[in-house]
Image (cartoon, rainbow, N blue to C red; front, side, top):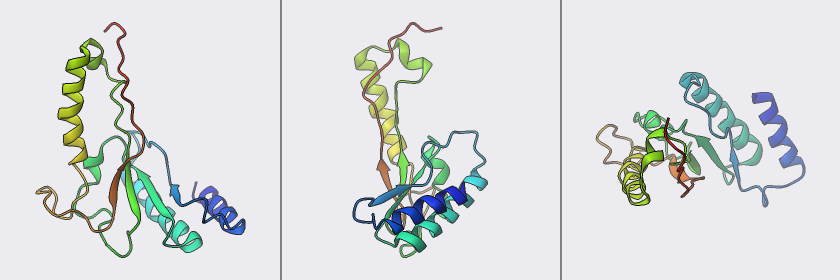
Length: 155
């Protein structure tokens, strides 16, 4: 995967696409069963590849495994200089869970407001778990979402 990333980034640099490709996602939606240490290592390698080839102006996006709080340890990419222009990319879909299928639209809105706010506030801080000092390095972005809800019968 690192070799493929290197090839992609080098091809973009060779074609002088930095004014077109202003951001690069290292891995879209890594799932919950990914080994977090392996994933973090890949993210670190990927960041270095993108920075060394495309420069500091290219934003770097990393997926949060649908659990942003896992990256809120007071250590993940908090260095302001090294991790500027980096984003923890969250995708808060609320359509793919069994419990929500029985919700009315009003209940679904209430659920999203309550749990969505908790998720948004779960990262990224330098003083976790107090969460009062926002990280000066990595920022947060909601890159994909859906307002849809599933009304299929529950199991």
